[in-house]
Length: 358
Image (cartoon, rainbow, N blue to C red; front, side, top):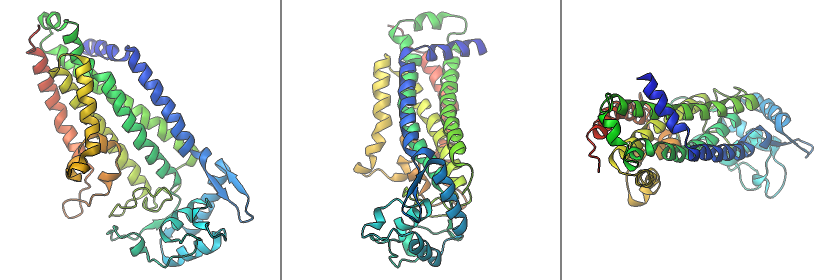
């Protein structure tokens, strides 16, 4: 079984189009990291000069350390008063991490305080624990880049996995395989196992590289801070207390769940359809279609169970917790993926074994 799985895994990896797809993914990753990584950080010093990169990150962390803790209106006013650039369009200026995050929710166009309370600035928040201010740039940047990287990885996985079964039908090699000793049982299982291994390894490698890059550039600082308070306007609508560290972990879980869901769906289509092209087309349509789901009034709770919205994880994280606030909605896609895996092993092997060669 291990040899069969290794052979099937090699077949997936040896396709030139898979290498090309991963090369394009790496290029996209490099571009996103240049835009979201540590080298993109700039801060304005009190004398009006700007610093960037590691120097700006260290400066921002120092300011965040001064104000870290429970978010209050007093802190808000002090931050806006201390770091305001004193310009009519001060609300659009890049100043520092803390100022920019506060200005986004509490500032007027000129950078002055708009008078909102914390409850008014975050109307969706229903958590019992108060929001905590801190350095969130590294975590927010990681989540932002990860969402787009994983969404793009979804296209790569579809390209790589569409031929797993359908390529055998197109080349008429399925009849030969099914007459072999293990053709009707172990071969199908080996194909499915190799596909899941490939998908998980690709997703894990993508996440691990991003983690290492952002940890090297930003470190763990700010992990206990509320993810809602960031200048990216990311996850501001999360209605319960969520630290930056919890947000990053939740996103990783959703990304892995989306990877498993997408792999499961692509394998079933590959077992049902006769050619890789048909499988590729159908899988791409089903993958992208949920992006338009809200236009036809499909409930967001249903759309959040699809791979596309698991990768773009913000929607799912903004749902209220289930079971009287005890269970996060992120566990539903994970549970669905756990249920689908054994189903795909059973159904995929069964469909392939009963395929009628033409």
